[in-house]
Image (cartoon, rainbow, N blue to C red):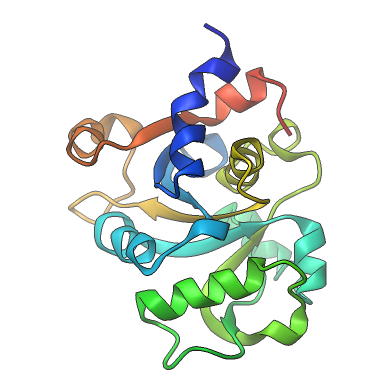
Amino acid sequence: MSAASDLQPALAALARGEIILLTGDQLRGGDVDLVAAASLVRPETINFMARHARGLICLAMTADRAVRLGLSLSDSGGLERTQRPFSASIEARVGITTGISAADRATTIRAAVAEGASEEDVVSPGHVFPLIAREGGVQVRASATEAAVALCRMAGVGDAAVLCAVLREDGEMARAQDLGPFLREHGIAQADIAMLIKAGRR
């Protein structure tokens, strides 16, 4: 079976608006993330990530989209330390209250990835944390940010993804081998960054 075929269950899940598990981010020591298509995000998506993954909920996007939203990479020293290409946090300009609820964060994400979205649609700081993918994708940077964007493109659900690092019950970062029971309980499909690289995806 080809690498592209191996990815089909995860791609189908993303196309349905479901959450998948992404593994293989060696830049972050093997951290794993829950991923969903930003274009299909719902409050339930955010709530599930907050409850079951418990990491920081982020919005991975292309560099082109970041430019349209008036976003740029934050301090490069932070990137070297965390391996997360953060920009300034954002909030939707309209349609939210405190910004932190699952519904408000879903509203912010939808505003940021809407067709024609611009810097007029978001304010900073906020409660959603953008990550800016590198041009060339996983072929130049094999991390969850680039992989999540690539998977959403392959699934036909846009070029942006919501992702959240998974913590174990003890608060330490989870690894793929920790999550067998979790995957079975919730019926979550899985993809690995190595599959994308092997398939030649960007």
